[in-house]
Image 1 (cartoon, one colour):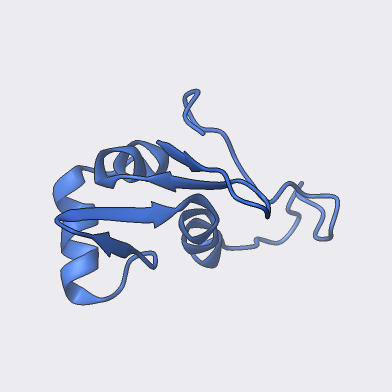
Image 2 (cartoon, rainbow, N blue to C red):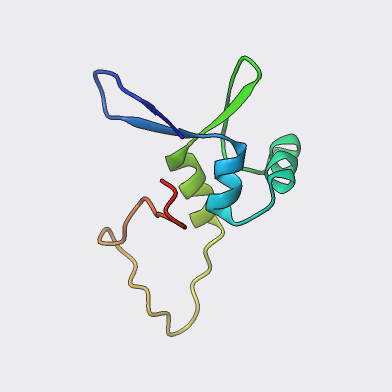
Length: 88
């Protein structure tokens, strides 16, 4: 995880292994998503591939399904960043 400090808000960047942990999928699946253009947005910095944590969370949430009688209330009170297994 890389935190970028600038004059604006801190941006948190994840590498492929960290995205795999956050999405609970193998690294090979994350790489496959990237090749097929269906995964979270990413940036290339030289040979490194980095993902903005907010793009990863948006990708996770786009697959979220509401069911009848859901215990989750929609609305702004829901957090926008999730911590999974201690990873930020």
